[in-house]
Amino acid sequence: MPANERRAKIGAVIRVASGNFLEMYDFIVYGYYAAYIAKAFFPAHSEFASLMLSLVTFGAGYLMRPVGAIWLGAYIDRKGRKKGLILTLGLMAIGTLTIALTPSYAVIGLAAPVIVVIGRLLQGLSAGVELGGVSVYLAEIATPGARGFYCSWQSASQQVAVVFTAMIGLTLAGILTAAQLASWGWRVPLAIGCLIIPVILWLRRSLEDTAVFKQMQHRPQKTAAVFRILAANWKLVLTGTMLTAMTTTTFYLITAYTPTFGREALHLVPRQNFLVTLLVGLSNFVWLPIAGMVSDRIGRRPLLLVIPVLALLSAYPAMAWLIAAPTMTRLLMVQLLFSFFFGAYNGALIPWLVEIMPPAVRTAGFSLAFSLATTLFGGFTPAICTYLIEATGNRASPAFWLMLAATISLGGLFVGRRSTTQWR
Image 1: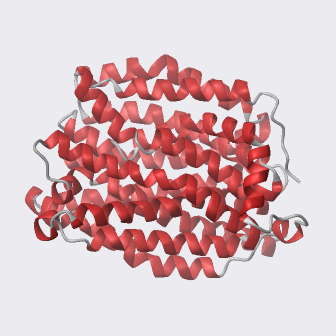
Image 2: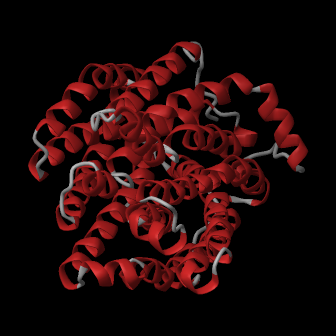
Image 3: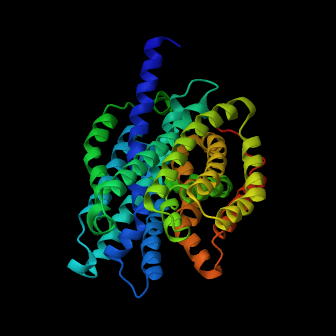
């Protein structure tokens, strides 16, 4: 590849992935500070009830993801990758500003949680298609035989967001008292996300539509046409949804839920929890491109089969070992194991989902499958894990949720065993 073409591709990857970084940063920062947000917006008769209301609101953002996947996905498939990716960034910005600027329940009463829920729903609408839009863009600019590697940078950019958010958490935990963090400190990361928006918007405006999209002769002219094509390919969407259960559950278990789990279940201090999250983000960042390259060489299916099996065999023993004597070191070791599962599995899953979707609805089909799985599994992982611990009294019970997701993804591999690439 000529040097100028290589530089152009690297620049395109950075510009499109930078927006994905901000989308994920804005979306997961809520999960990191769920315990503080609970006290600010969702006061209740018990700390558990307050936290659950906050985590359910975190999950509510995912209810809008399938809507965003179809509506915004259809827009991207009809109007172009560039226009759609700029629109999603704008919607996420509005949602984040809404949450960052809303006064607490003590100031405006019931209006506070209502406004926060609206902000989360706007974030969910945007996030419903962001991942799919970025993945499709990267796949369409990839060089032959390297689609898995290129697609891996979508998820890798999210890990930069995980690390960045954890670094902010570490800094705040070091310079603010617990009272300051609970009172106003948790708003600082949201404000930082708002300040980054103009820079990312400027980067995305310089994107160009992919050559694959420009050469596409048959594009759906109306959203109704997208529905018809998706309905005709319902089995592909179902397969994609089932396979995605593993990756989305693992991701939110080891990132968004870690600070809450470490604090509420293991009674570790905030600095320890954020340090673990930071190191997990770095681990994810390393494994994703490696797995993408491996899947380019040996195919996607081997990784999609082996990783869920390993999770089924090791998830509960690992969690039981952790809660037997909770320490930051043990939490880190367990999370790094799950990080390997996530990176190795996701590196194969993302290009596979792009490749099997019909070209005319490539973004909408990918986004719908991924959003449904995130809505049903990943987004509510913090709430479900918190509930499982409370209901069973077993702090290792989040492993059961991960094992269920692994089982469903194995079922998806069986359902989609005859799925073949539709890339052209």
